[in-house]
Image (tube, rainbow, N blue to C red; front, side, top):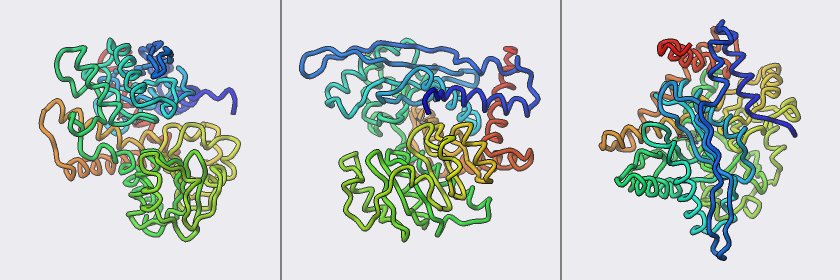
Length: 416
Ligand code: GLU
């Protein structure tokens, strides 16, 4: 899939929704262009005394509906186009679930597993200092994404607060609880995926209990999804990480597997349970009731979409399905619940975290989970409803809602 550019995915999906909504090109031209992109060269002194410089990015795709919001990714292959696509998806994600944010994303082109804790902390501090002019609780609020976690967010809070001269917990979400993080944030994305999977299966006349499931990816999103979907009584038959996939037709022992891989201490290839080893390509084409791609972009593409046998796809990762694959899956009648709806639980609880930081009043975990569930249910019903009504895919339904909200806001502001 060389030459694949995820931003083309964004433009094609936006275009389709805008056409159905009957918009003129001038109504949504603004949304085709990220508002602000910052590229920085981030130096860090390594433990051996040498200095290395890593490419860093922060892209604010839109602040039409509120401050830019979205994660920070640490991954060796990131580039500006990918970060721009991820930022745009955040704009549409926040709009579809109705939280008052625009969209942003940042990234560092680094493999965090190759750095010591000290190097990673110093690199994060340098990066924060270099993007500090454009981030802030009222302007652009980063959060964890692939390769980052609550600990990294803690370093950012500290660095940003030092620069400002007073505590600034609201500059990022997904922080440790002690620094103003929200209960429930760590599991929020997987919880939202589980709620959405239940809703989608129900809409298709099925129950999650007893459904067979394959989950691609064992990061935060994949592992929590597998855990909670398993806890709902589904039969998770396959999971995978970067090293391998594992399969058992009778259902995997998910709690044991999650303990084995917890905190990245082990890879699935070294797991010794009663499993068959399969590769990622095999996992994606298993005959299951539900497939959750929770790894990276571009995993379901023109090369493998025809072989997909899952009856339902709920996207855990951002952008796992290309436009070409979407068309093939539509032709095969396989519903795809899109990323901007399915994995929105993370940013929804990020919003709750930010609200708690602003109020300086903290909620219990039950309140967080209840509010998340209510919001995810409502978003699902409106997206599913419009997709049925307009006879379009669920992805197009989600974009119809999101694009309309943003374009109407632009109109009310007199920007178009
Ligand atoms: N990185 C997550 C996402 O892609 C969460 C973003 C956030 O909480 O701001 O949705």
